Amino acid sequence: MARRQGRQQRRLGTAGAVAGVVACVGLGAGGCSDTAAVAPEARFGDPVRTLRGAADRLTESGSAKARTSMQMASGGTRVTIRGEGVYDFAGRRGRLRVRLPQDAAGTSDRRPITELLVPGALFMKNRGAGVPAGKWVRVETASLSDGNLVTGGATDPLAAAEVLRGTHEAEYLGRTAVAGTPVHHYRGTADLARAAERTGGSARTSLRAAAKGFATVQVPFDAYLDDRGRVRKVRHRFGFVNGQREGTVAVASTTLLYDFGVPVTVRLPDEDDIYAGKIAEEPAVKED
Image (cartoon, rainbow, N blue to C red; front, side, top):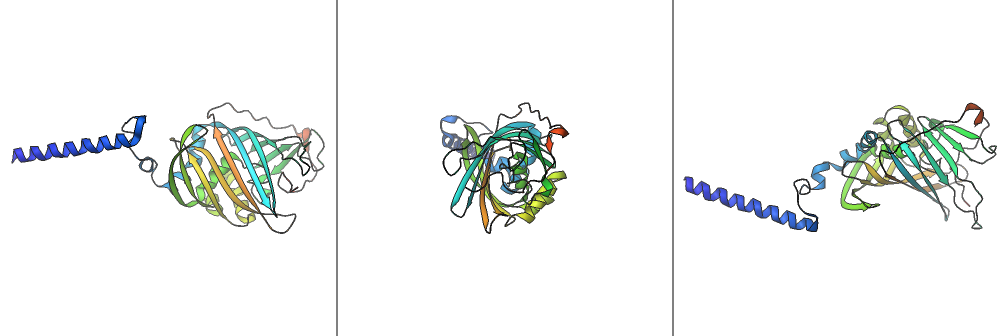
């Protein structure tokens, strides 16, 4: 009896060793470790739950540099605007420099728009539309029909992650890389109303406004999370109702995050430097 049990244990041990070797071979030249041998799905758990917690992982990380891209398409016209800056996730504030596209003639004398993002408000300098040079415009984000997911020409980086709180279906597409960083690729759909319910403070108000103002509350997305569950890149596809003309503007907004932990200083403008006149509610880029 004891001999038979010993033989069985040796066979089980051999089978386990073979399985371990197969797992290591599958990993290729990258080597083998207990952590590496665990599938990403097992480490991160359910994709929906992982994506809903992505905003919390960013808040824990403190801050990061950000690059943004927003492409708008309507009536055969397509324009793209880009931004770059820094964001403090813990303080919910950031600074972006947004560059407008060229005009129809292929030239542009438009100065970059400087944007300051703080809870409940968006400050813009070089906004144009009759605003005196050197003056800032202050906009209450809750008053915007898109909750400032589109109006500023760049989606607030933390808001981009908080949209994922409304994820109700998602699939894991495997490993890839973003700017040289290994990431996990997810694709799914988020509901803006659900995202608002799961978000607190001024972000909830903004997402509620977006849920009412967009053509649909359903937002398809592709999200790329690093091994710590932080968003490295997220691409949303919004349907925005154009207030200037009939029809819906298809908006693809991409946010790229990197260099986590960088220092972020956001100094708000003095009251004397804020323009008190009325400005139109519209995306920062007009269709050419």
